[in-house]
Amino acid sequence: MAQAQGRGLLLRLIALFKFVKAILLIATGVGALHFVHTNLTQSAENIVRKYHLDPGNHYVALALERTAS
Image (cartoon, rainbow, N blue to C red; front, side, top):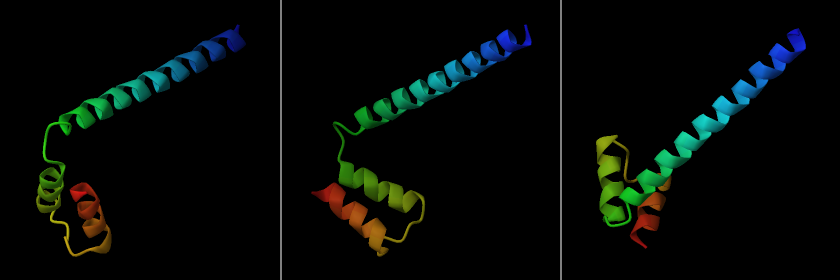
């Protein structure tokens, strides 16, 4: 009987993990759709300003450059 309860708990944990993963995937998709009809470069620059990132930083500049192309 204890083994059956363990399997039930394991199945519930797997189901919860898959549910959370699906919710995160949906949220990512909705976030990506937000950028379809917006200026991606302007949005990236706004994020850099909002989080006080250094635009001269190699990686930040590279990301901004890639959004411009």
